[in-house]
Amino acid sequence: MLKAADVASAELVVHRDTWEWLAALAVDHGHFRTPPAVEDIKEGRIQTVLCGRSLIALLIELWNTRSAATPLEGD
Image (cartoon, rainbow, N blue to C red):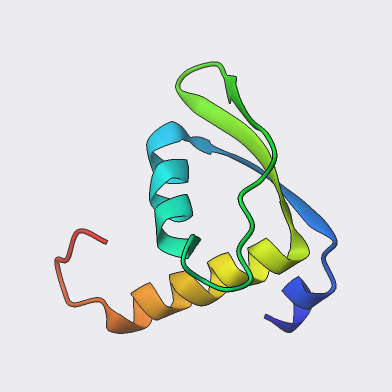
């Protein structure tokens, strides 16, 4: 988390389904901002850029999911 605090932006290249899950996970966090552009690239993937603030929000929400997960849960 401390390393993420120094990041101005991060480029993500992920599968579209993964992006939709990540965005839905982080959208209610106060620091998350929807990126201005999400570009479709080949093979079902997208490319986007998250600001540092949004990256931190996403990492927090991923951590919360990890901490709250039960064995064999889909998330």
